Image (cartoon, rainbow, N blue to C red; front, side, top):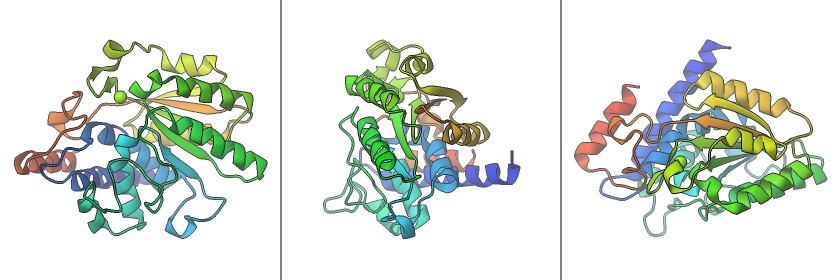
Length: 273
Ligand SMILES: [Mg+2]
């Protein structure tokens, strides 16, 4: 593993986390916890794995990213701003009336490929994009980031069956398995054990990793893109709120606000990572 690459991606992930705090602003409710838990994954996709950039945003061969757990779009906005899809100053306007950046992903935002936020739909959109890629004989890869709470949506498993039926090896689902959803622990709300085994039972090639270990993320993304004949699922063990000490492992900051004081604490916490 190239340690310089890993170190630079960790730096990018820190920038993504600071961008999330920027987008959250002060005294505005927003989805801190789930954005932070997928920040390392989003950084690895945008700054390492995916063939995509502002110059390629209309290129039919670009890789596709779908934030199926749409409320965590702050992580995607932060990455898109870093890459220059729009100016970083736009982050601070997130969720204000008329802003380019709304609380859930919309295709009107440069770099956003799918409207999501109604949970469970993003993987089906990904199946459609992957099928289109096969039909058009294009080499692009589709990545969909799912929440573990989101897996309670039945549509996820219809998409899982379809992806297997059509042997969509150009589709990778990444489950941000932080064990927590909006109102509590995922297993208390709707018990879903053995997520890798469930995807495997649907014919997917699965990988289980530490979703905050950049080396493991890079390894799994590389392995997944080499699999032939089956869709791939990367199940990433993560910590909700990762990087913001007072928000870690709690549903209190699933959708919550930062005061001037807690915002300063959050920034210091991320910088100390
Ligand atoms: Mg979750």
